[in-house]
Amino acid sequence: MFYHIKELQHPAKPECPDPVYAKKLQEVLGGQFGEISVALQYLFQGWSFRGDEKYRDLLMDTGTEELAHVEMLATMIARLLDGAPVGDLEDAAKDPVIGAILGGMNPQHAIVSGLGAMPADSVGNPWTASYINASGNLLADFRMNLTYESQGRLQAVRLYEMTNDRGVKDMLSWLIARDTMHQNMWKAAIAELEAQENIVVPSTFPRHLEKQEVSYTFFNLSRGEESSRGRWASGPSMDSMGQFQYVAQPVPFGRKPKLKPAPPYMHNTMLPGHHHHIPPHLT
Image 1: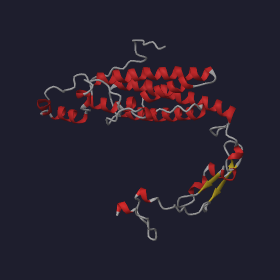
Image 2: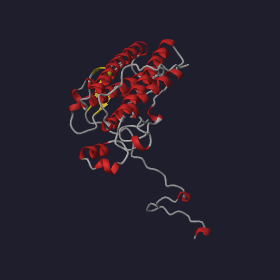
Image 3: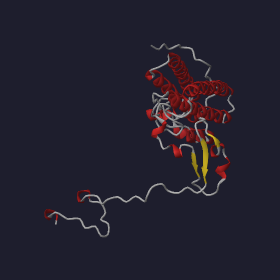
Image 4: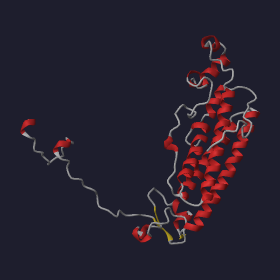
C-alpha cells in the first residue's frame, strides 16, 4: 500500500520560468538513468525478491523515495514552464529573445502536456520499461543500481552547471546529495553480498562446468599492449580463486565456420557450385 504525502520531500521552485531549461531537466526525469527508471527498477526488484526481508525493505524504501524525486522534478518542470509564450507564436517570435526561447523549448510541453512534465527524456524519447533491470539476483541488480545512481548523479551535476537559477540549483543539490547516499548504500550492500557469495555472478553455478583454463585470462585483441599494465593482467584474481594471465598474441580456439547451403524453399543466394533442384511447377 502506498500513501501520497502532499508536501514535497524538498522544495522544487525556480526563481523564474525557463522553458528551455525545462526541456533539459526532462533527462533526469524520463531518461534512461532518470528518476522514473530508478523508482520502478527498485520497486520491481523489491516486489519480486524472495529472500532476506532487509533487502526487500531497502529496495522498497529507496524506490518510494525515488517516486518522491519524480514528483519534485515534475513540479519543477511545470514551474519552469509557467508563462511560456505559447499563445500567439507569430507575434511572440517577433521578439528575438522570445523567438530564441520558442526555438529551444520542447513544443510538446505546449502541445501535448499543457505546460507540464512528460515521461520522456530531453530530446522527446518516451520513457520505456526496457530501462528497468530486475533479475532476481541481488548482486547483479545492486551493481546495476550503482551504475544507474552513478550515471544519474553525473547528469544532475552537469545540469547543475547549466543554470544560474538558485531555486533549481537548490533542488539539484538535494538530488545530488541523495545520489551520493544511494551510491554509498548500494556499494555497502554489494560488499555485504560479495562477502557472502564472492564477486562472480551467479555464485551458484558449478565452477567445474566452465572452461576454467580461460576463467582468468586477458586476451589482447587490439593494437598495442598498454592493457598489460592493468590490475587485470597479472596477480591474483579479484575473487581469489585464480591468477590473472595476459596473452599478448591470442590464437583462435575454433576453426573457420562453414555453413551448409540453405534449402531451396528459403530462396537464399545460390553459391557457385551449388545447383538447387527447381520443382517443375516453378519453371
